[in-house]
Length: 243
Ligand code: SAM
Image 1 (cartoon, rainbow, N blue to C red):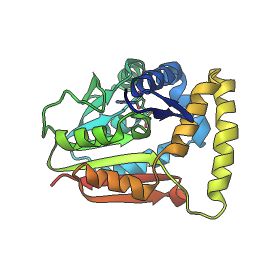
Image 2 (cartoon, rainbow, N blue to C red):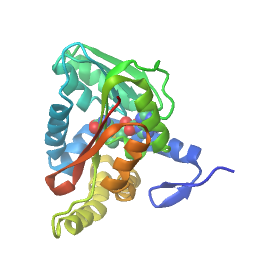
Image 3 (tube, rainbow, N blue to C red):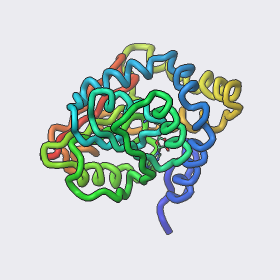
Image 4 (cartoon, protein in one colour):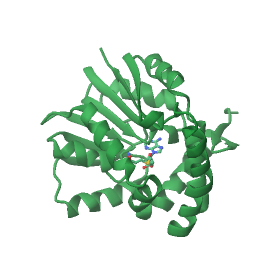
């Protein structure tokens, strides 16, 4: 029998976790972008801008934006001329993204349903791999990191944006109170879906601390694994190189 994994605070079978995460994102897909603005007070836009500035996409580069959802990071990469494959396990999230891309008349984007744990791309295909607020939802994170390493070219770079742990005195407590009390209520009021937003908060709480996640990136084979805290560590940019 397979080991249980956390779905929020609950322990479930791995396949059940993947199914439930799928249900969460199918449920929030249509409201996902407006909810991101509401929950972060628009901050997620600044985090994503900073993230893409770190990735430094170059015109014509092949970039895999994994767990790309509705395309926020992919659009920023494509605007700088990169050829972006937006991959996500959830077709509903990608569907919303494709509609947004069409409205904005964005080019250079390919949309693919993929599980980060087992990609269908050939080895050494991409110059960079990005994953923003996605990795904590993946059931088998070490498998996803190994796949990221496999599909990158030598000299390719890995960048991950994820919620993290703040070091600012009092800030972590304040954020915890906000996240656990306010976010599920916004979820209920705006999207009539308290349970999905409760899962999202719990998944943030359970994600490994920066040093532990950096060790996982190195374990997957990446060199110069690093974590850069942003805004006192509320979010962090994790990176590594395939050499
Ligand atoms: N990157 C986008 C952004 O920053 O707005 C979307 C982030 S959203 C919080 C997380 C995404 O991870 C969802 O679209 C979900 O479907 C996707 N996801 C979860 N598990 C996945 C997996 N195993 N493989 C690929 N995508 C996955």
